[in-house]
Image (cartoon, rainbow, N blue to C red; front, side, top):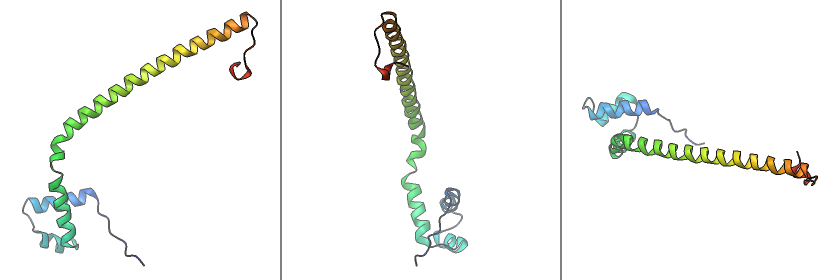
Length: 110
């Protein structure tokens, strides 16, 4: 039978890591306080420090994301315009077929 691995929330992990960074407790004390292995805490601290630069990159990522959304919105708007134009053209062709008595194939006649 497999042992279930305990999962911790991001908020809890941040709390533990910040206690260490602020110098309130060392890894051993945190391990004893929260009843968890020091290697787990060490991993969280390492992961946090390795990814700290992302905190300052968020504005750039947000800007890139917003620009991407604007480009996609513009593309969608152009596609809607094209669909509208094609619908008008299709309806005009159907109308002319009816005016001149030219039968439309069943899949186009609705």
